[in-house]
Image 1 (cartoon, rainbow, N blue to C red):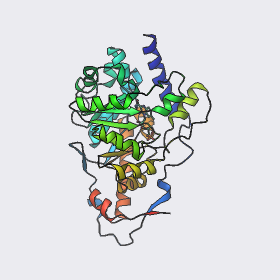
Image 2: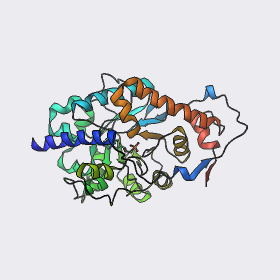
Image 3: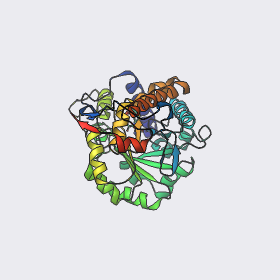
Image 4: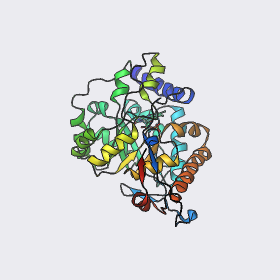
Length: 335
Ligand SMILES: Cc1cc2nc3c(=O)[nH]c(=O)nc-3n(C[C@H](O)[C@H](O)[C@H](O)COP(=O)(O)O)c2cc1C
């Protein structure tokens, strides 16, 4: 129980720090080193631009994913409901935060129950890779089946665990556990980072584990080592650790054909367009939706409408009327 309280306090700290402090990397995502070549003569009606796509068998109206944020507290319950409702209304995907709290204490399950407000949206569960060995396959299966979700995200957060006072730093066997889970469960498994990036080499290993998709979650957005530094008032040595998002995405796309989510510092429709041209199937957002999620459903919808408008504008300016044309027509120049 003492440990449950610790998880609850930690989750509350994370939300508070992410809302109140500057938790972003100082270094950039790497997208700023690329420019989409301007097309002075587009043959497109901006009003007809189609942003729809599909991901792991579900239709999406926009290529957007709300990445894992929270769970396990009363505040988390409100945030998850608001985000799920917005995902349903927009026709985009949503990932719940780590469900470890509900495995430790089943009364916390209600903070993750969102199917009532999002009957058809693509919704993924979430658990830490290093925590997998604590649970059997039935328990892991229940994270998705009990809540009628579409997939499970397994997060890799080695850098965060390494700097956290109470962090789990024995990662031996984690690879095999991911492999066991991915080959035992019936739903898709998405492996994600939390903002330190997945390399081409790790993506190749994940492909061997038979995971269904990868969220490369690179560096340039939220720095979890920085969040932990605020929590513990500890050293800032590892605050900038990680593979910039554009680099991680390029490497991973070269290595695997799996569906990819690009997250980690995606902050505009132009970032989104560049990531989609570099091979992402979806782009993911966490920190920018946290504040709107505490304000309400309309604020979350407004955020994504702004990003969609910017993405449409970028597509117009590279002569693309849908995502297929964006990938085919856009010229991405390294500057
Ligand atoms: C407040 C907050 C809580 C998060 N909690 C989780 C989590 O429980 N599980 C997880 O896999 N990722 C978690 N993340 C990481 C995000 O899903 C995402 O990978 C990362 O923040 C990079 O995206 P961003 O730069 O848009 O924030 C969290 C992010 C934020 C901002």
